[in-house]
Length: 312
View (cartoon, one colour):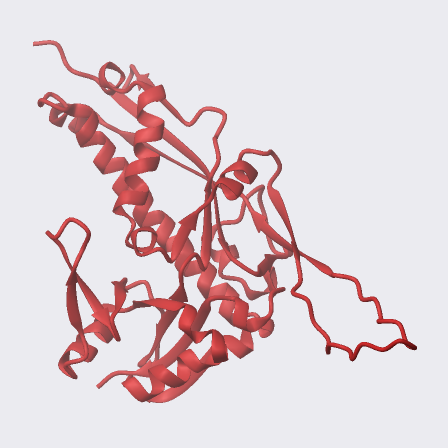
C-alpha cells in the first residue's frame, strides 16, 4: 500500500485558517475573554513592520468652571499617548512519518489540525506567562502588584483586587498554579460552572473563571496569581509570508511539516520598549525582561493585578 504523506492531506489555504481558529478555541485564556482579538489588532498585525504603534487619547481631566459674564472659560486640549506592541514571529517544524500513519483515518485534517493548534495554544499561553513576568517586574507596574507572605485567602484576594480601586469591577478572571487552585478547593472556595456547551465544568472563584497553568511563577514557596479583566491582553493574528509548507527529505525518508505564525499578544496599556532584543522578534526570555516594558495607561485602566502569596 502506498505511504500517505502529509503533503497528500495538507492544503495550506484550508489548513492555515483552521489552525488559527482551533488555537483560539483550545485556549482557556481566549475562551475566558482575558485574551481578546479585535479587527484593529488583526489589521495592525497585517500592516507590516515589527513594532506596532497604537496611539490613544487620554481622558478629559480638570475642574469644571463657574460660568461668568466677565471671565471666559479656560480652554484645555485633549492629550494623547502612545502604546506600542511588538509582532511575535514564531515557527515550528515537525517530522511526520509517525503522524502520517495516523492520517490514514477518516478525517486527517482534523487530526493534524488539532495537534498543531493545540501546540500553538500551549506556546501562546507560555508567551503570555513570559509577558506577565516581564510586565509586572517593570517598576511602572508597582501600583498593580499586591505582595503578601501568607496563605492565599479571600480577604487578601479582595485587597489585591483593590489595587484597581473603583475599577476593580472590571476584573473578571484568575490565572493560577494548580497547587493554588487545589489550596482554594481545600478551603471550599472553588465552585464549578458549566461552559456554553454545558459539557465542561469550569472552576470559578468569587463567581469568576479560574484558568489553571503550572507555568505561573513559584519561587521559594511564594506563588503568583494573576487577576484579569476582559480583554486585558489584546490578540491580533498576522500572516507569515509562507505560513505552512511541506517538504520531504528523500535521503532520510522524512516528510516535514513547517508552520509559521505572526501574531500580537499585547497587555493593553503597557508599552513595548524594545530595549533588549537580539533578533527580529523577541523570544520568551526577552518578553520576560522588565527593561522591555513601561506602563502608559493609568494604573486603574490596566486590567491586570499580580498577587503573590503562599499556600498551606
